[in-house]
Length: 333
Ligand SMILES: Nc1ncnc2c1ncn2[C@@H]1O[C@H](COP(=O)(O)OP(=O)(O)OP(=O)(O)O)[C@@H](O)[C@H]1O
Ligand SMILES: [Mg+2]
Image (cartoon, rainbow, N blue to C red):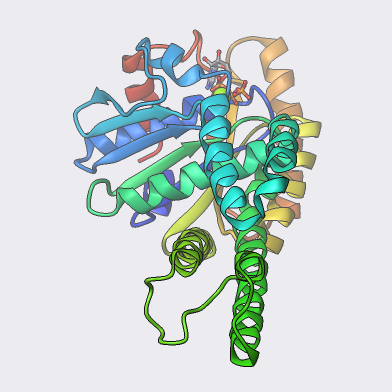
């Protein structure tokens, strides 16, 4: 079942419409994998931080043990955005002449509130967590926020590496220009500062050149991080996406849409989990609902014929204790 479908995948995302059971299913899967001896890191990208509530533990933005073999971290979006922007600001200041620094800082303060910045910061954080997970964890399970931005988030590594490539290309041109300028005669200090000077001997004693080299290595490190992450995201052997939904009209439509967006991005979908299926044997009311749900599940299967569909029952109570999660996990084996 679900656990078999994700065996060997280093990164597994859980996504879907709000309230369908993403956090419950991500936790259930992570706990079941850990109970079968795998080392698992559960990551929440949801600002609402339901992971801690569900596990009845204060998790927060540092790795916290939940169970043997299972650790979790709740990415703090605000702290992540702030740290991300401090890094970007430092890089931009190094790139720009001093008289533009105030303007750069003002621009970055304004962009702190924009959704793109948020996504980029969270994505970089996930990429670094995945990078650092090699050898530490067998699986990184990511519980995504019900933002509807998930598929854009998955496409972002490509955009980010293209953006960084653009910056690197511009610097390479500037450095070539500096070389040419130097060949024609010693450039002024100001020109060297703007163009990025290269010592004629090829050594790095020149402070401007050292600064350029440092800048280049920062940009290359980020570009390589995003390239590695993009390669993982688009390798179905390493990464996959589980779409969680309930058997209702809108969740089915949104699942089909999310699946198509993920396909365009090149991210594989291992399964759809239809959560909270009504029982047929608990009275007419629930039997009628079960019948209605059957129609929605058939329509899901018709629209996504190649994606395995796993169904989980509506539980009598809330899925808020370890025991319930373990029990639910048995149904995923
Ligand atoms: N199979 C189930 N039976 C009964 N209740 C369930 C089941 N699965 C989840 N729930 C309950 O449904 C509620 C929503 O679940 P959960 O928080 O996992 O959804 P979510 O998709 O993560 O929500 P959000 O979009 O807000 O992050 C919770 O109260 C949870 O206990
Ligand atoms: Mg959730």
